[in-house]
Length: 476
Ligand code: URP
Ligand code: ZN
Ligand code: ZN
Image (cartoon, rainbow, N blue to C red; front, side, top):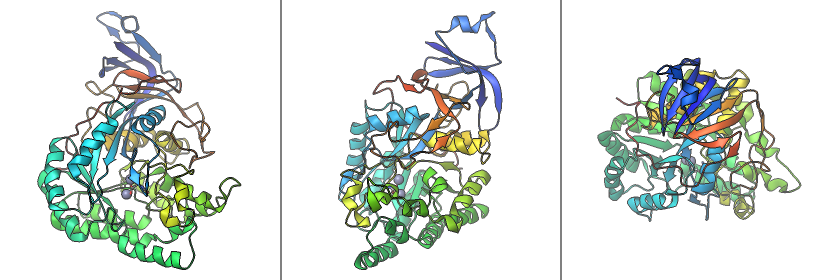
């Protein structure tokens, strides 16, 4: 099966050009001058399918390196399964996810890893890899790290928050960092000071402050800055690179930037919710349907930050200047009905997370449309860098001969209105309701197969395969 994508503007992280893309089977075979011939004959005549991309951008499929499909959390499970979540991702122009295998303290790391394979295998619309979450790290978890790296799970997330659930103390973190320094894995950190936050949460509840907005008010930016600094120092002593997930506070960015300026291998991602939404949106969110509890829709950790403190502007600046390297979604959806509602009596019982996997490419393209990011930087932070950061580059993150045929035809003249009425995530509300995007995902190919055609999903459950990842290509 040969497919030719003709006449579009092919965009990479380093430039753009009008070109034709030839995909042979699952792989990109050539990127050619428009109208090129093959052995003297018209190329169009020799392929099975021609996709006309005139007037559109041809970009590498999105790589979302932070999702939580079916994650057990707060007494319930994230509402998207691998089937529904990856289908929604595909419709939104993402062709690879890296999901977090979740391990709670009473669980065996490798058992959880095998369980994640069972959940995902045969169900995914797009290709997928895994990171491993390590909670309350013990000797067995450290041993499992070596085994997992050999399996292509080359990154591990640790938590400085969620005491008694995910949190590891500084000594445990140090030991895991030393193991990472030894086996080459990329260590990832949820940086919030869980001990102080727990006190603030208890004090708020005792004072009767139980509305959703207190989730944000009890997780101040100082506790993200402090944890970020502490983790950087611990990583420095252990001699390991460090990647910060879901960076939300400008002060955390300053810590990451300072470490990078010192020459440390320190990296950070942020997420659309921190780039576009604020605590004030959450405070002001009232509707007849959900009453004051509507703010639960935006409960995630770290929380949305106040728009009066300048975080949003600094996150965009940091993305432009490479102080932050990429944007993931931290897709962790919980429906209002029966899930977020678990926290009606106390914000502390609201399952943490926001669902965005379908909208990341659009939301970041909107930054191109409004002049915040260049087209090339948009490709870099949504596809190329996540692929490189997590050992997939060459196969993913780029349109070049030999790469997987993961391609998105993006229409800059199209329009998208985000709404729960039209989205494909298994979620009964949208954190992005009413957002307007000056562009639209038109066609999506995953390893050469068209899975989205003119915005319509035409793929099949099980199209996606597990990706055994290499070590991060950012590390020396
Ligand atoms: O609120 C969030 N972010 N939920 C998902 C778990 C995590 O910490 O990434
Ligand atoms: Zn986290
Ligand atoms: Zn997460």
